[in-house]
Figure 1: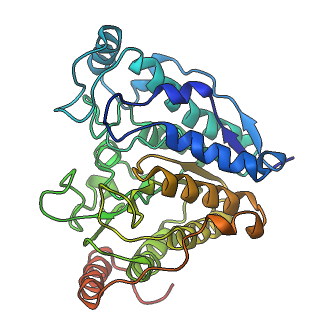
Figure 2 (figure 1 turned 90 degrees about the vertical axis):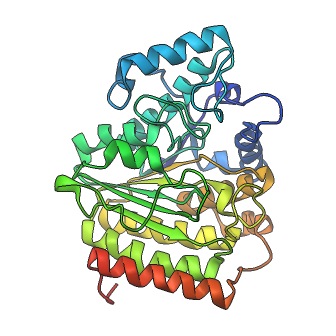
Length: 352
């Protein structure tokens, strides 16, 4: 039995905004092609999602909003938010099948250690509105479904934008650790994700935002990851990991000014993968989401799938950027200040 399942449906490609909108489904098809060319699917099982019911969406969305999406989907015009997420004919069905893929990823963990749904990761969607190209929040939904079986769920969001919708939907949920590493400065979307946002009620302390300055390279990013994120995960001891791997933290992305390389991404994924086996019997769901340099995003996802599926490194080495990236001394100092602040807020000592 293969230990990794790859959830895929050709209907994923219908979720692609028209014109010069930056969100294009070519990223997913490019990644799948890279995997096919390297023989991944001799080692990984491909699984088709089963369409979920509309009622399941109501765990995280208002019915009025779901009906609104259906109506604009039929009309094929208008916006589902303030202007970033235009409706097109069939957007409801295109959104639903991708959410269904994430639910299927959870279901197949009964048979597999890991499940990949590059069509998922819509972390900006709110309870009653779309946001940031995201219509339905599959990340929050799968966490809600998963906690019924696994108890403690950790969401690790590596997208360059703050996972604000996921945070809002789960802010008071004591069974889910919400971690987001993202660029953060005045005027940058979505404007949330400060270190002070830590959750509320019984979930106070279970939201961990790592706000990073523009220009953060692999060195400073991975230091923050080791010093803060890993320690928080060890405190929480999750039984399931959900990774949201947006490719827009890459140095070549046109919308985000972080400077991760493919090598930096892979170091983070390797650590998460190891922690999943340490705390959760390997149970890990890998989702896609952002990434507007399509080539870089496809390579990042392919390398990450290779890591969790145990594909030999030689099969994918040519997909890497040449080297790790470095931050300027100014940026390093800024990140060290963030690390110091987060350690104080979250009570994280110096021991790993």
